[in-house]
Length: 461
Ligand code: PLP
Image 1 (cartoon, rainbow, N blue to C red):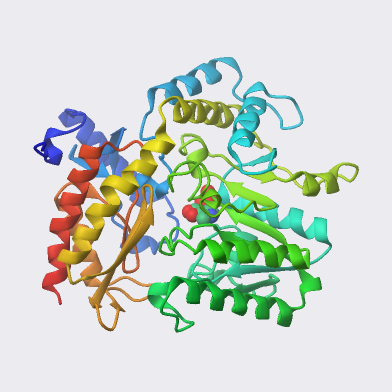
Image 2 (spheres, rainbow, N blue to C red):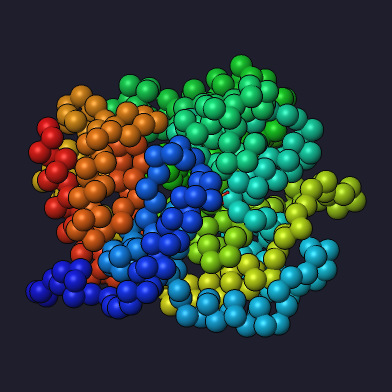
């Protein structure tokens, strides 16, 4: 039996000079004066300054070290400042910083080859974008042009990005103020047993009823009008609800039957996060289009894309694809993707993520759930876990309302930060989403902190 070490004994250390801390404070002041932030009321913000990052760790504006259990926006799958990725960006910058997308760019060619090697089935043509939202924009455009249809089906409890089409696909409150009502998107309910709206008591029942609901939605919307069905293979920010395999296979079969393009959004769940290269692999389902971003290069340089199956790519063999971006396949972004994917292969990072989920994070979280009445459910896979906090385990009343925050949740988050853990939180959930490279000791140290912080939530019962 090994002695477990606390977070203070692990990982890298850094000293910050008084000047470095002062420069951080100045950056904070400039930020508050000039930077307009995403998804926020500008007047009530108090953002954390980050002075440095390394591996699973970040240092805040006072030079205090925190374990990054958020992976920022769930993107640093390979950890912070991975040396071979940093070096690849340096080398690429010295060589070619930018080329227009119509030219052959060796970094892009190799990145496309590597991505195609890992995508499931025959998804072997890659269109590069700047991030996840525009990947979804283009996937929907491809599906509409391919089918000649307009409507798109998308799940409630989903997030697909902040641009116009992507935010309209989104089935969470971020869509509400951005919904113009003419997007052609129709939302449906996916399986979510813990809060089953189908009154199901087993996974199989949930799966079957969710499929019946989807089938009826398709019938009532008119299958001949539906271009695409978009879903996150494992919904991320909406709560990491792993769908039953029978559901995903049923969706594939339904799309095939009606000539609907199946788009799997793997922006958050892809590239190792779920313990597989892509989370559709858990269900043995191959979509027609697969969108990605984040983990493809751990976000070191903005990058996303669409992996396209040959039957859709063929549509654009003789007919131009009417879309593009100045930075499609940007050399710095794709060079960092090549280095990321090569390091993930060489270091067995996807296998490590799978093992962490099975042997460390999953078992620990289940114990944590037993100990804390404030934990309604834990669920996940790999390094992709959600802890659902409730006021009462019987009624399942969430600790913060859907689409909102609460003083109780704010206290739990603050308790994590005070103890040296940066969590990822959304509504009434804390997500355990460290880098895929987090060590077993670091994972235990972070979970010890979360365990202690949840006492705060229990005390509010
Ligand atoms: N799709 C999913 C599943 C996401 O989680 C996100 C971002 O969190 C996006 C799309 C949007 O990606 P981006 O912010 O890179 O545009």
